[in-house]
Each structure stands twice: as C-alpha cells, then as structure tokens.
Amino acid sequence: MSETAFPLANNLQNSLHDPMLLGEWFAVAWSREVAPQATLARHVMGRDIVLWREIDGTLHGWLDLCIHRGAKLSLGAVQTHEGQACLVCPYHGWSYGASGQCVAIPAHPEMTPPVKARAQTFIVRERYGVIWVCLGSPAASLPEFSIAEETDFRVLLAGPYRFRALGPRLIENLLDVAHLGIVHAGLLGDPKHSHIEDYEVEKGTRGPEAKDIRIWQPDPDGTGKGAHVSYHYEVQGPLTASFVKYHGDQRFGILAQVAPVDDEHCEMRLVMTMNYGHEIPEAELIAFQDKVTEQDRAIVESQRPELLPLDLQAELHLRSDRMAIAYRKWLREIGMRYGVA
Ligand code: FES
Ligand code: FE
Image (cartoon, rainbow, N blue to C red; front, top):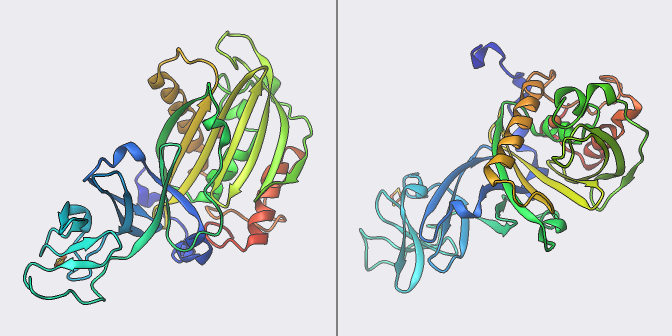
C-alpha cells in the first residue's frame, strides 16, 4: 500500500506548532553519533537542526540554517578561528562561534560581522548516551532514569524507530498492558494469561505513575519458564515515559522518548537497562526489541483517528486501561495540542 493510500487528516497540519512542546526535551541522536569536529543533521518538530561537536567534546545544537543565504550548516565544517571553535558555512564560509554569533566573513575579512549574523541556538544536553534538545525554554528537568546509573546495570540504546503516527498514540501504546499478551504473544505475554489484575494509578513527579502491575510472561528471564512479573510505569513528559519490570532480583527498564519529526512522523528512541543477562550479546537484545517494536508498529500505524481522543466519551475504556485514561486526562490538564483531539 502506498503512503498516499492513508493520508493523515488535514487538521494535523498545525499540530507541530503546539507551543508547549517547545519546553520539552527530545531525544534526537545518540552521543556516539557526533564525533569531535563532526556535524549531524536531524529533522525534529518540522525543523532542520544541526548537531556539532568541538574538539574538546562540547556539543552544540542549532537551527540548520545559515542566515546569509539559507545553506545548511550541517554541510559545513568544524574549524578553529582565532582560537575559538566555529561551525563554518559551506556556501560562503561564514564562521559561527559557539554562541551562534558569526565571527568571520571571508568576503569581508576586515569587517566585524553584523550582530544579526548569528545562528539560532538550542539547549542541548547529553545523558545516558542520548543527545537531548529543547527547542525553547525547558519546562522540566531532563528525564530521569536512575536505574541506568546503578552499578551492575547495562545500558543499551535501541532505535530510532520511525513511525508514521503521532506521538501520543505511541506513548499510550507503551503504557498499555493489556496488549502484551496479544500483540507480543510468546515474547512479552501469553494469550492464555491475558487477564489484567486491577492496579492503581497515582500522580507521579510529573505525569501519572502506576506501580506493581502484574503480568504473566512466558519467559521473563531466559530460562524458558513462565512467571508473573511486575511493571512500574511513569509518564515523564507528554511524549516521554518509562517503565521498570521487576522479576525477583532482576530488573529491566526502558526510557522511551518520542520526538515528532514532521506532521506525519515520529521517531522513538529507547534507553534500555538491565541488571542480568550480561552475557547476552547486545545485538541479540536490540534485535528482540526491534521485533517487539515492529509488532507495535503494525497496530499503532493502523489506529484511527491518528489524533489521540482526550474526550473520554470517545473510544471505550475498561479497568485495564487505567494508565491510558490517566495519560489522556493528564494531557488534557496540561493543555497538550499536538497529536490529540
Ligand atoms: Fe552561509 Fe552564505 S549561505 S555563508
Ligand atoms: Fe507493545
């Protein structure tokens, strides 16, 4: 089926202009993808951005646009001008210093570049091997995933997974426990044990949080024996959520961040961490997650409407959907506009 066979609704056109999202942290790349003196282009929230790194490791994230004639700065080079690291435009060689200010114009070497000659800069951070960018003023601190920093925990980075869907449907899928035994039958659940026991949802640090949701899994620890595990979910932002799965002393967690790319697509990046299975090759663990995500993709990309309905009269909700209901209510409370109706 071609993409045009399922055009997304026209009313999505302005959804990326939700001002609230300008305060959010988006996971846009892995730290390892931007080497010293290298640039990396990304498309986030309908904008082209360039990530570049100084030789000492300092990272920058700017709008990927030279104010002179609109060339992409990501095609330029990281160089030093009078001792300071600069990103040099590939077209006429304007050099932009770390603050974004243009410091040299080759066609006019004697001239001090005008104050207006500057690149638009964004706030960037690195944590858990992820590059986070905020396109405005941060409304919250960086997402926390403290177990990834505990000793004995191994960290793996999975994705990016590009979906032709909008962020809230993806995050709700992550918070949805009743699909595990159906969509991920044999991997994360068992259709014969798909009953979901009641659980409570509380107010967490930012969004809703649910502790101790018991799920039957066919092989939680790789020994081939089924057992109950317990999930603890936390909504960390409108498009960021995490869970930790407990099974005896074993813990496995995922921090998921969904960054809107354009009006129709999103990219999800996962930080995964676990304190067992250290002998399992990384490629095997990532391949497992890739498979799970592909199963979710088939469902999430099929969901209509694409916009998550915040009116709880739309769609049907059951007790097992408590976390999804809480997520929708919270999005409504905070005034989310992107990806919702
Ligand atoms: Fe960048 Fe001219 S377009 S220097
Ligand atoms: Fe899933």
